[in-house]
Image (cartoon, rainbow, N blue to C red):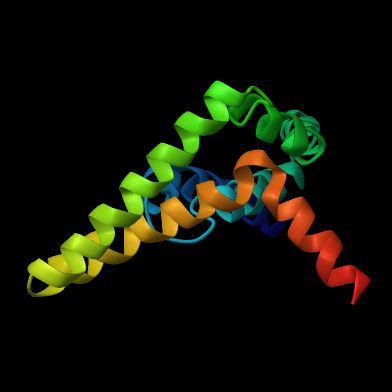
Length: 135
């Protein structure tokens, strides 16, 4: 087996491994599986044109996805705010009343998810970014 083929196989395997890991990393606080998706597609795009097209689509469709998940309809925005508040309350409750490693996981995850919803719902993150850039 020549070095070029071996390098291609290892690069593709690393890209596939990143994509397979997304469901396991997705629930963790922070950006979840998004960086892994981009990394996996980037590795696969080195050798596969279909992965390159999919990577471009993912990069160009990020704003559209946000508008699909958080539409500008008052009832849906209110529902998302309610979900965010509930998650934050659950996280605080778990932080106070649970013990051990489960306490840390069950306290941080809902609070981080709730705060993410608060920021992205109603385009609050865009308002915050504009206000920071003004200063």
